[in-house]
Image (cartoon, rainbow, N blue to C red; front, top):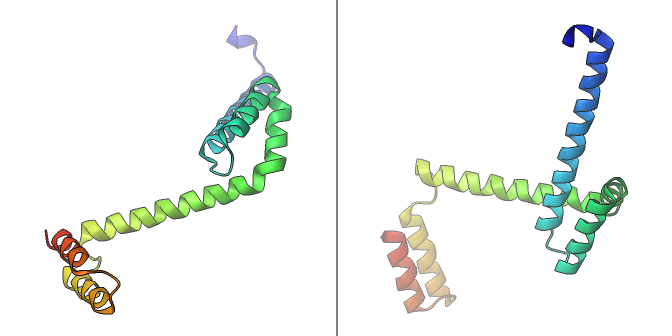
Length: 130
């Protein structure tokens, strides 16, 4: 059976497989974006999901046109949050973050300025030390 395939047929099959893979990837990305979007309520999310499921091509293209810009903004915000968390983790693991003495000095300044009271100071101090 495979001996009957010509080079053009193989390339044509690979092209269609790639297009199918990209379509599935795009639909999954849109579902993830719908679920993580905080500016839509549950009913709006449900309607978008039904639109994409029952009219997939139209639903995906309309979603990309209507919410494509905000989709990129959410991706950027998620990437920045992940970067910040990773940097904080690496600094904590490497011990290059703010030292306990620096944090205690900042707490003392907050207590002196009246931003926090003595009870909060003691609680935060205990967390930093222990």
